[in-house]
Length: 64
Image 1 (cartoon, one colour):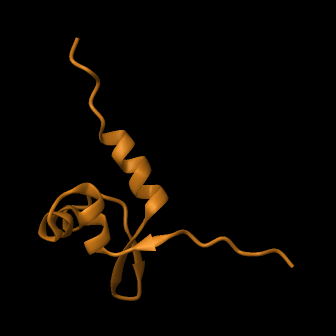
Image 2: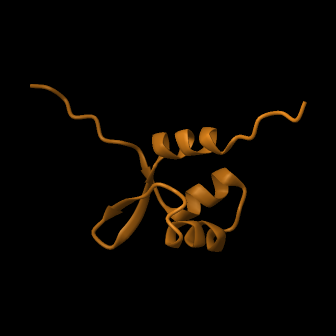
């Protein structure tokens, strides 16, 4: 039987800590649909792989 691989889901507090920002800022990004989320019932969760990809997309090129 094949073993299912679930994404590693974390809450707003964890994402805020990882990004070094406040929970309120993360909540605002969620409400503005600026960050990828996963809804589990009425809970907002974040797939760590999606957050890593999102952070990479936010990088700015070096000023040359």
